[in-house]
Length: 421
Image 1 (cartoon, one colour):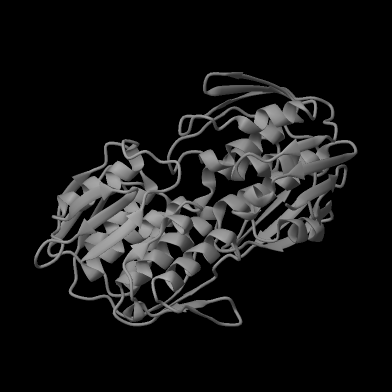
Image 2 (cartoon, one colour; image 1 turned 45 degrees about the horizontal axis):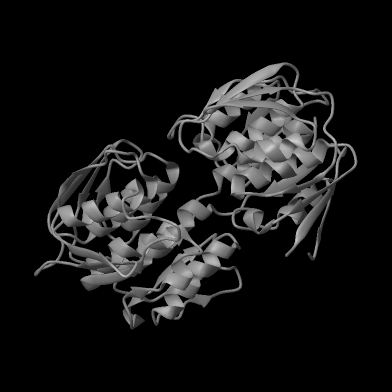
């Protein structure tokens, strides 16, 4: 199992390119199943979850073709089995996203329940209830969701999400794209990745309106055709590298990104004392060698501050001037990185869903362990400013969301290397 060794103290300086967004790429890949001809998806990040989704298609009899620019062509007409097996689904919860498109396009689907997910838990429940509202017959047995469309196909429906769910919104939106009549999704997720998926469905000839608001209207069409589509840039990767510049007092320009989908994060970076400038597809951050000021923040669904950037700002606050309160309202257990940061000398007190972070003069390198994707990013950021060496174990979590993280940080001047475990 690979590890990262980071020697802290280098001030980051330079330019890097941002990869395509994993959280947009996965639903868009799932939506290719809706088409009645080959579809090409470009700007895919080179990440394990993307490989898993492509492998899942291979299991189903589809043979994706990957070109030299890492664009993938998928022809869903070659599908042979409508089963998404547990051994693949358990490694990636986003596999549930093939459920809606398969039922809509082929009339049936068998998708394993995501790993460690009891059926009573809300998110999977929302996917099932949304499809049932469109007339699907669904049984859960043997750890699989077995769904079948009614005679004549899915029908448009009004559906209210009692909890805002990104994947729930995406799954039902995909199913509705080929359903008979109009579907209206209320209390829908507003994330840019949901908008990207809607744009992709429309590029195939669909009719989705209102994505980016809490009410999405989908008029089902007879068929969706071939298309060529480029996935949006990753806003969380963008934010992470900007925080890396801020925490080291450095200067970084991130290219091939979109400043308009990161406004809550850029606002907090400015509050922390960063000089932030933007163009159509780039963001530059310069600390002019200054130490950051602590900021208070509260996570909430888009367009508010994203939960996926919370851990990175705890790292920034850990070495900032003053004390900042970070309130997590989306996920419980999202402060697991805090206990690893204590090993590096961070002063963080967790009370319920709030972390009170008091900045210290310096963190100290230590052996630490990544517990989840964004928590592991916070450990990398902390290591960049810690005295001495930090050894980060279980970095497969990092590799799930950050393409070539050590190469990109090396390009900015960080002392970081990957070693086999």
